[in-house]
Amino acid sequence: MMLERTLIMIKPRTFEENVAGNILSMIQAKGFKIVACKVVKLSKKQAEEFYYVHKGKVFYEGLTKFMSAGEIMVAVLEGENIIARMRELMGKTNPEDAAEGTIRKLYGHNLRENAIHGSDSVKSAEYEIGFFFSKQELIRE
Image (cartoon, rainbow, N blue to C red):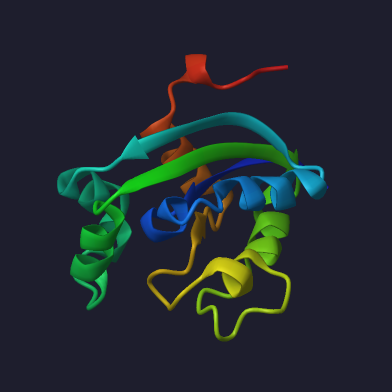
């Protein structure tokens, strides 16, 4: 196993519903280390920049509008094989298809409002972490 970092975002509707603490508890119960965490509100332009890989796709406009509609919580997690392990804890993208006990099954509403975003690869994690956090904000060991 390899020590990695990943970015998670608790999405606007989920953050507004005051369940961020429950989600963070689930994450910590798995032994994942939180090395940075903050609450931000993306502008529409920032959401478009963050989701640039989806530009031109049918869901892009709705996704960027939703992600800029309210506050989100972003966090950097660290652990062995954290990207795959966190994606397993999140569950499938569509909450209807997610396994029982996963974050998306418990807190997601639909495909777009699926409670949480997580990096899908080391390359995307590096980009996503750098989008939200400076090196000074990340705990180092």
